[in-house]
Amino acid sequence: MNLEKNNNKDKLRYSPTIAIIQIFLSTLGLGGIISIVFAILSIVEGSKVNDLAAKDNLELAQEKFKIAKKWEKCAWITIGIFSVLIVGWTLFWIYVGSVLEF
Image 1 (cartoon, rainbow, N blue to C red):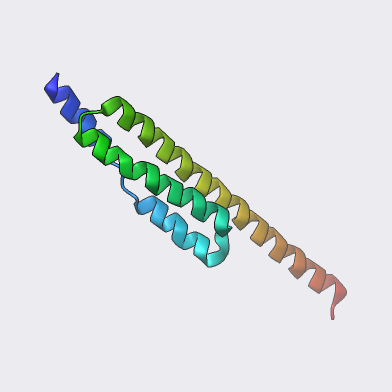
Image 2 (cartoon, rainbow, N blue to C red):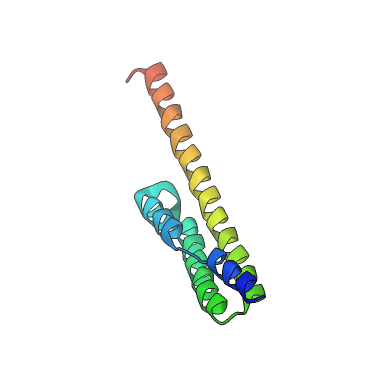
């Protein structure tokens, strides 16, 4: 039983690297303030995972891990939507500029 708990503890390690990358991309204008908030929520929930796993509270750690991953996913979706909008808006104005020929 103890070996099984140790294996689960190793699997429940949360690393905030992805959330930090999401914050960086958002500051470049690819996700806006919304994805920054989602990434910060991911870091906050993820920071609880390592502490709970160290205290052998694996069920709650698993729940917090899922919540942190949910916020990461929301941040990626927001960054993707903003990126598509930026590319679409740019292509639209390139097309309008070529048709109107200022």
